[in-house]
Image (cartoon, rainbow, N blue to C red):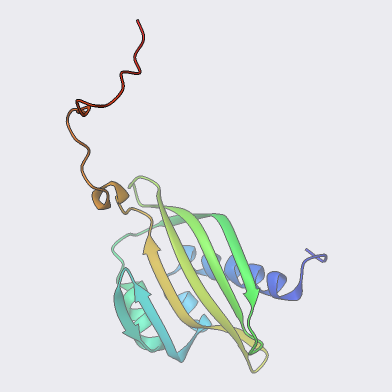
Length: 149
């Protein structure tokens, strides 16, 4: 990891630590948040550290296993880091699900904390957004016949 830029090393270390805490006890990542943290969980907004920890603690599963499939980190001009995670997790006996999470990080008193947290499951059915396909394809009468026998 020594050849990576410092923001990638820091972001990667934070993400590794965060998910390890989350997988063992959903209240533990609370130390990574600050009072001004804003969480968006599947479109629902939660403001503040207490509300964020309460939401994470209220999730219905008992056990979880994460498998980070990709993570990207970028430096921001304000000396912060923005981290984007693509992950797959297995909660209890449910099938494996994918999600995306964005965590902007800020160094406060020599500790990296999460100022915002945006989480979305990757379960959306994009086929619902496309126009329906016709049952049959009709060729206009003046179209050339391109089928050769």
